[in-house]
Image (cartoon, rainbow, N blue to C red; front, side):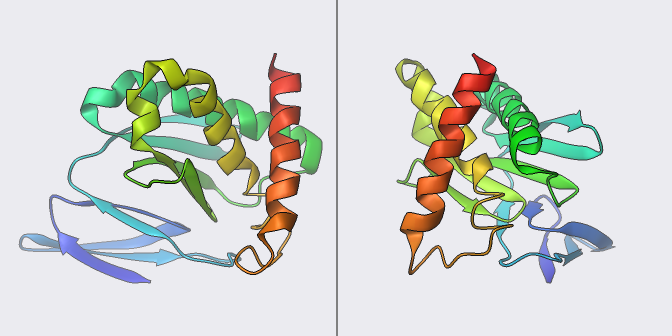
Length: 175
């Protein structure tokens, strides 16, 4: 997939960026996403990021600058969840995972290599436990729907049931 944006935009996408060409005030970025079932792209000129390594996997949290503390917590939770799920379910199959603060009305949404988590959870300090739950839940979808290839649109009960159970395992292992 090739995405052409204004130069001041970041592209957060499934897969790995393999080429970036700057032409004046625009940037063309080429991504390869394989073996992935879906492709997701988020374009932003607002979000900032923090990253951490888990072995050879780069986990990056993208968040509004005013939500930096929450964005860093989401990064920590995502890394912790990856550690638990790799131990329980096997290796994560991709080289990176992006956690993106999003204006979604859902708690979060999963894509291969990318998860989104609702902005309202970043901003509501009273919802910290659900914020962590939503983050760990969306990370678990990297295994249940992404690796275990069910049809999450027509048969969501299958991956959602497994992910709910996996999220419980995360909390048991973590705490």
